[in-house]
Image (cartoon, rainbow over all chains, first blue to last red; front, side, top):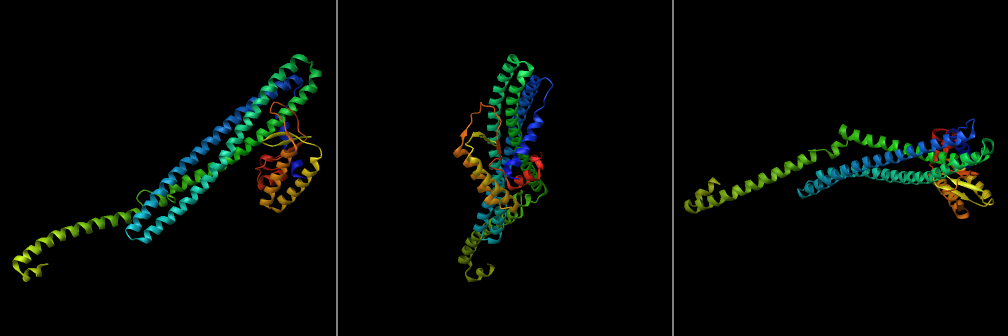
Length: 249
Length: 92
């Protein structure tokens, strides 16, 4: 059996779920219309959910980018202080974070696609729902129950197909959103547990080392300054006392 | 012949297209079984582009039943497997 015919079987069964035939076929119209409005609401909710997930990922991305910038600055400082080992460490961490950022970028792009699709689906469905509403009223007004049957079958089947299509698109988008949510949670957990925190965190070891270097540098420079000052004085005393004064230095 | 491309809408296409679609469909089935993702993607894209080339888009205002339902272009290989198994969201 081909993919197309399999798809049709799946589709027909989805359609039957939204198609509930009532004793008076005209009631079928009203029931279907109710279901259509419900589905439209669900699609709107679906769009909102995708947008929320996307925003969450964008926030995480911004945090990671910030950490990356910090690591790059640290690497520069380490190179300036002639500490290649520290620079290497910072760059390795940066590369690991960049992988996460790339992953998030792909997910954001995927969610954007889902968002667009759902918005387009909502637009198509709402046009059809509006037309169905008008048609439904005219069928109810013009035909007896028996006569209405054929007309109802046509329009209800047609719209049920659209509903099955939108319903499946919604389910797929929800699945994707769930996956992304799970990933976003996993990243949050890694950050909380300190696994990524080690890479991004507040005063990490690279920062401590760099701080030590800068303390050392300032101690050295102050010392040199003091020595220079002291040296100046010694020199003066040397001039007075002659070669013997040199011993003190 | 009315064809629905899932997630995109309906197209009116000549009956003659059916045979060509069948051929592509058969290749897709084989590729899904063999798990060849890239070729699967290419064939699925071809299936859809042929319908758009030969067919004529039906306006959103029209409400009608389709003769053929074609899966969406971004269907993953895993989802195609689910369709054959009748599992996941593609349960009958």
